[in-house]
Amino acid sequence: MSIVRATVSERAMTPSRFVVSPATGPRELRLAQFLEREDPLADAVIEALLPLSRGEQEAHIARMLSAEPGVLPPALVTMRAWLHEVPLWFDEPRANAGGEVLLRNGLLSGFVLGFKALVLGYCSPAGNKPLAFSGRLTGDVNKRLAETARFVEAVSHPRGLRFGTPGFIATVRVRLIHARIRHALKHSPQWRPAEWGAPINQYDMAGTVLLFSSVLIEGLRELGAQVSDADEEANLHLWRAVGRLMGVDEELLSTSRSEAHSLWAMIEATQGPPDLDSRKLTHALILEGAERGAPPAAIDFGYSLTRHLIGNRYADQLELPRSAWDLAPKVMKHVVGRVDRAARRVPGARERALRFGSRYWRRTVEITFGKSEVPFELPIRPLRA
Image (cartoon, rainbow, N blue to C red; front, side, top):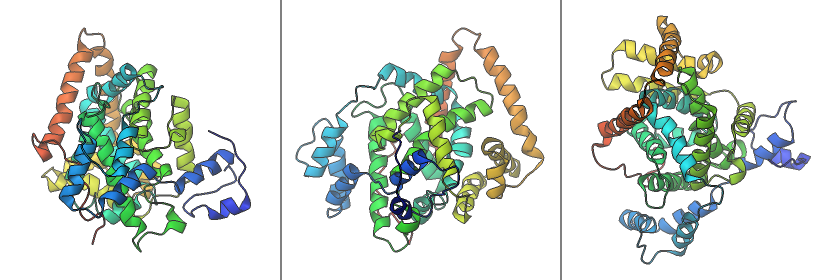
C-alpha cells in the first residue's frame, strides 16, 4: 500500500465514521479515501438498466453473461469486455486449491461463515447500514443466508471463476445487486454521506472479501480444523480473484496472509463499536433457527458458538447472552482437532471430506431454493418501505 501524507483538509473531508486515534498513521489515512470510492463499471450498468422494465433488465444481464450477447447497451458492452479479462497474476490451479478449503470443511465452514464472518460484518456500525435499510437480513434471513451460501460455494468449485460458470455469474450478479442498492441509497434521505461515506464503498467491500477468506480461515482453526499455511495462501488467492470480479480495487486485495491480517487490523482500528443495527442483525441471524423449529438448546449453542468465534469484546457489545453452553465450542474444538489430525493419516480422507463437504453446501442451498439455481436478481425495492 502507498504511503502518503494527508493534509488537514483531507482529514476534514473524511466521513465521520472513520475513527482516528493517536495510532492512526499514513496507511490508515490512505485507507480512509476508499470510504468515498464506489464501483463505476457496475454503477454505469445500473444507470443504463433502470429506465427499462424488470424483464428487460434481467434479459440484458443474462445476455451480458452469456456466450452470445447480441445487442447490448454500451455500459454492458464495456463491462462484458472487462469481465473477459483475466489478470496475469491469476493462477487457476492455486485458486482451485483455495476453494477446497471451504468445501471440504463442510459444516464447519458453514458455522464459521454464519457465526463469525457474517457477524463481524454486522459489527461495522456504518458498513451494516445498507443491510439495515434494505431489510435484506432481518426480513427474510433464511433466503439471504442461502444466497450467501450458494455464492461462496459456487466460487469455491474448481474453475468456478471462468466466464459463464455458476461462480462467475453469481459474483457478477452480487456485484450488480450491490450497485442497485447503492444507487437507491444515494438517492434516499436515509443515507448520510458525511457520516458514512458512499454506500457499499470500497472500504466495506474490501472488508467483505477478508471476511470470506482470512477471517473464515481463522474461524476454522478456532474450531479445530487443520488448515495449512499453503491452503490459507491458496484461499486468499481465490478471494483476491473473487474480489476483483466483485469490483474491489486491486490495491485492497491481499496477496499474502500478512497483507490480509494487516488490512483487517486497519479496518478494525478505524471503525466504531457495534451499534443497535449490529445487534438487530446478529440476533435475527441466530434466532432464525427458532423460526424453523430449532429447539432452545440449539439457539443457546448458536449464541455460545458466536461468542467463541468473535471473542468476548464483540460478544458483549452485541449483548450476546452467556450460558452453560459456553464451554461447548471449546470441547468441540478439541474433538474436531483430534479427529481431523487422525483423518489426515487415512488414505483418501481428503477426497471423502471434499465430497461430503460439497454435499453439505449443496443441501444447505436446496433447503431454500430446491434444485433451481439461485437467481441473484436485482431487487425490485432495494430499500425497506
